[in-house]
Amino acid sequence: MNLVLKESMTTESTYQAAKTVAHRVENIFQKHLAKARDHGKQDLAEVPSVSMIQSIIEAAFWISLRREEGHSPRISLAFLSPKEAGQPIVFEQRIPLNPGTLTKIAPGFERAGVHLGVWYENDEIYVWGATFQIPNLCFVIDVSEPGLVVIKHRRSDAFGKFSNVAVLTGDEVKIVDDYNAGLPDCPSLLKSLLDLGASAGNNDSLNVLLQLSVSMRAHKRGGTLLFVPADSSAWKESVRHPLHHSIEPVFSGLSDRMRENVSETNFTLWRNAISKEVEIIAGLTAIDGAIVMNDRYELLAFGEKIRRREGGAPIEQVVMTEPVLSGNAQVVDPAQNGGTRHLSAAQFVFDQRDTMALVASQDGKFTVFTWSECEGMVQAHRIDALLL
Image (cartoon, helix red, strand yellow):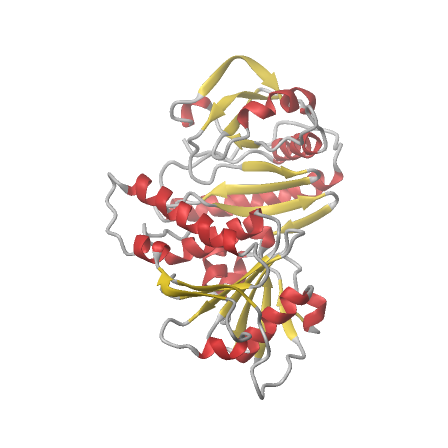
């Protein structure tokens, strides 16, 4: 049964941003549901009504501002019935969608992949239990940080990454604009993040870049990853010499895993092995300086200092974009995009135009720098709204 629930509840908003965004979120989920049906997708979730969406957002937001024994809750709420949840944990007594009550049980359900199930009966919304399994396009809202909640749905690709629909930070609302995926200079990583209907193969390299981005952002120390062609050493013209920490022979742990033949029986083991290799590489980005990886996913160096190529001109401007509605492209001075780390990454891509630079800030911002043939300049894509 794939239904779009009728509006049946009226609530007075306690969080104005929830009221502002609820209609738009419902429309987005309805469009995705219709598209999925047209493509013959199965196991599709129901879409909550506007008032239900509003109520769930409000509960999540107020939970995010609470603390339990000195810790801020980090939980995930998913809109589905127990029948859609495989083998869930079902509470004998329903729990009301109440921030105080949910904050108290949050420590037991904060692990990755665990969702508290939210459902309804008549005019009551309640939490019925917890599950690891949710249907495609299931409405999910994550309590990520104090005052920050993220609305998303589950992708069908191999790594189980969720597609973000909206990010609410206090009274600021960002709606993800997947139209950006069709732009001519949109980098492959961004297309992968935005292509909500994409189906990825087991060895999809774009998912590895995505995992690297998430892991780089997660350690919160900032970092830079330079992604360079395997058949060229021109990148060495844009780093200081002697190299601080070159690797010889190259470290191919991730590359070797990417080339493995994967069957259904060993897929989980392979995915876990990939994740461990990703954590190793992303961890090196916490060291001062940039890491260098080629497009075969071989690690070449870490802790390297970027410099302007000898005889090259300094970068003077970049096109800054963010894949959210109303996020219009702006031509700005590269120094406006961030600190020294961002400026040096932009200079690197300006000098080495067949490369890509991934930059994580300590404050959680994440930017992908690429060369835009259409614009004739470096393009800075802010994608942190997609990585939460």
